[in-house]
Every structure is written in structure tokens, then in C-alpha cells.
Length: 433
Image (cartoon, rainbow, N blue to C red):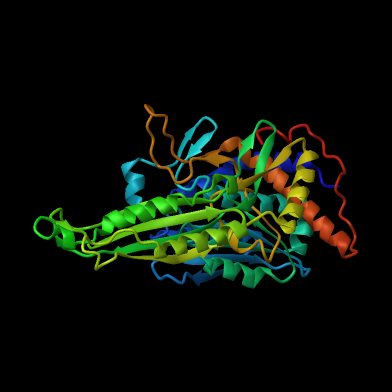
């Protein structure tokens, strides 16, 4: 019979070496636009997982300025497979790490460093799960085909990596498990069950240039027009529908003695609900027909163009994710932990997978301040960190949930059930979750 206390003891006993692995990963700058660093981290990850029986495949990202995606496969005896999703890249250029002295630093329960929680801590969590299964349930480890998929350019999200995952996982995949950091509280943690979709737009206005002193009436001010359009875009935000528009960058004109002939803005839109998302796209594109600025003579109207640059569809609440949430809740409850749902505004690779494979996210350790490298004691600004005490309890919960997932698939297929206790002992299992 599998003993959760023994698994937890194994995880705690080996925590120093897990954290040594994390330290080695954090020491490698893997900024998305540093392909050499991304590939170096891929080499280390390949080396670490090889003794666990994983074979590596590298796939160059479509953009040659990025590194190589990494696929680690451990073939199993059955047709069943499970995908474990992480990524190699971070958002921190080497210069930023140096400028802010942002590096591995341990302070109490906190471990600071580039990617400590987003998402190198998640990759270490995957390693902990595989290591625990090797120690406690080697027959189950050998039964399943495990596929660890690491995106080389997740921070520049596109559907390319999602397509790669689907190519390898759609056949007989029980789940796609995404190891972005998860939130926690006293006696509970949260898993991500939905994420907003995101669309980005470029708004351009063609005005009519003119001398601002001697020929002002002939000019049609592109900046004034884009200011009107920006207000219209901002008004499309509807918090009751969790629909937001953000005008993130604006530029235009050239010199102050010229009526500006050109202006540009960059906009992003986010929403959870696919219908709200689609309506948002339709409504912002309709604004290019609403022009308010002309020259004084009325013989030239500004021209507004709104172009949809890219879109990533929402990951809404869905039956596949809900089933996985129930499994994780049941496994955690037997450990004395509560699992709550979180609908997160940011995107992950799960946005590209949920519609084809049951997907759940937030399976990594607890950590906050992702994408922040600054430290300012006066303002309380803290850089990204991960909680040391969250690793073993979260890994144990993930292991027991994965075992329950596999047991359910076996039962469905009429295979012999593995011996897993109906009620796990609570002692020593629930601390720090």
C-alpha cells in the first residue's frame, strides 16, 4: 500500500538536492531573447532528467531569435500518457539581473531569483513528482508514458508550442498538467481552472500635415483623432463581464510646429468568456469607422485603422478541467488540505491545450512577484520569490492526485486497481501547503 507519510518524508529528505537543482537553473539567464541561455537551461534539464529514464528531443522555435523547445519522453508500458508542461524562458535580460543584483538569495522561507517561481520552480516540482514515483510507485512510473514539454518562448506566447504539445499528447492523454506557480493560504492552495484570452491591436491614424503657424486650418491632427479613438476603446472595458481594454503605448507627430500627420497606439484586450471575447474583437474593430477629426476646410477626414495583431482564445470553465479539479480536491482533502479554484487573468500554455486535453494549471510551488526584479525596502517592492516550505507538501498533493487520476483510468478500462488508502494519515503531510 502506498504510504503518503513515507512519500512526504522522501520529499523532505531530498529537498536540499531539489533546491540545489533550482539554484543551478536560476543561475542560468534564460531570457527569451537569449537563445544561448535558454538552450543551456535545456541542456541542464535534459541532463537532470536522463537518470530518470527520459529521452530528449529539441525543436527550434519558429522564430530563430528564440531557443529550442524541449520534449522529454519516458515511454511507458501502456498507451496512457500524461503531459507535464513548463517553460525554459524568463522575462529578465542579463543586464536587468546585473543592474538590480537579482540572483539566488535565501531569506528565511523565501528564495529569490530569476524564474524561481516562474517557472523554474515548476520544473523542479515535476522532477520531485517523478523522483517520488520512482521511489514509491515504480510500477506506475513504468506504466505511463510521461511527456515533459518545455516551451522555449512562453513569455512571447504563441500557438506554436501548443501545436507541438497537441501533436504529442492528444492520443490517449489523461491530462496536461501545467506547472505555473500556485497560490496558497493557511491550509489551502489554489489551482488555475480558467484563464483569460488575449488579443492585441495596433491603432493607426493618418492625418494631414500642415505648418502649425501659417497653415494650421489645412491640417487634420492625427493625435487629436487618436485621443478620441483611445477614449472610445477605454469605454469598451466592462468589469461586470471581466472584459478589459488597455491602451499600453501611444506615439505620434514629429515636431511641435507641424500639425501631426500620423499617430499610433498599441492595445490589448482580455476576457474569460469566449462570447464576450469575440464581441470585444468585433466592437473595437468597428471603431475604425468612427472618425471625428477633419481639417478646418472639411476636405480631409482623418483615417483610422485598427488591426488585430494576434489573438489567444480564452481558457474558460470546462468539463475536462473540472474533472481534474475534483481529483485534486479529493486527493488533497485526504491529506487535510483544501484546494480552491482560481480564474487567472494571465495566459499560459494551458490556453492552447484545454480544448483537446483535460488541463489544469497552478501545480507549481507557491511564489509571488513574478516578472519583478526590483527590490526597494522603502516602498516594500520585492522581487520574484518562491516559498521553500511549499515544495514538499505541494509535490505530495500532486503525486497523490496523479495516482488517483491513473487509478480512475485503470478502473474505467477494467484494469486492476492499485492499492491506495481511502483515507491518508494527516500527520506530517499538510504543513506549509
